[in-house]
Length: 145
Image (cartoon, rainbow, N blue to C red; front, top):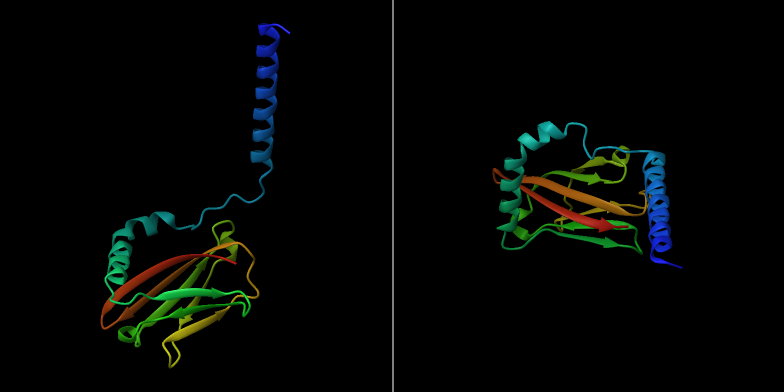
């Protein structure tokens, strides 16, 4: 087999590869943005950065853990954040229709336990947004169920 045949075979394989990629992209069913109002959220992004910086400056951080055997996510707040009020947002990057928000309601031990047995397996982004003593905070965690 001479050099010309090798170039022809390589070119043919490349064309088949490109056609396969285009076909896969066209067949993709749901191409959705993470948020429908992304422009409005982009404008308020500086406030979000400040909330994240406030959370990073805490002496003890908020701890988010996933217990697979209990099928729940635990959010534990430090002692100085026991009066926190806010919300917990669950984002599914691959499917915006599955996003939801719940109210942050801490128990006596500064913990909120969230059952996740009904959630789709895979990557979830959890955003905990709260206020305490007039200061706003934001913590973001990624969890794979």
